[in-house]
Length: 112
Image 1: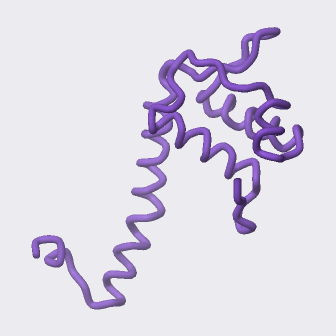
Image 2: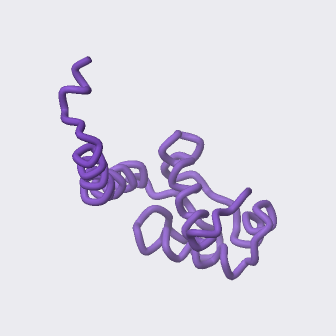
Image 3: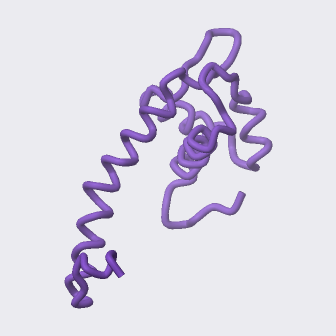
């Protein structure tokens, strides 16, 4: 995996796992690889991988069954969609609208 130097690696891994859930590559209740397994696959330190899993767990995207492993939460897709939509509306839309204003564009461009 090629990592972007602008964003912490553990957050890029969180985004990658969330993208896999949104695409259907990972489904609710499905077991995900162990920290060491996934870290080895991605070529990252297990501590970095653990930070990713901790963030995903705190966000309710995955959960740990002690002694068995990590699993995708049944409602993971819905919670990821809600969080990403909220971020888009709060962060991206205002930036897009500001950019449109600076370029002298209005919503009529979408009707063309």
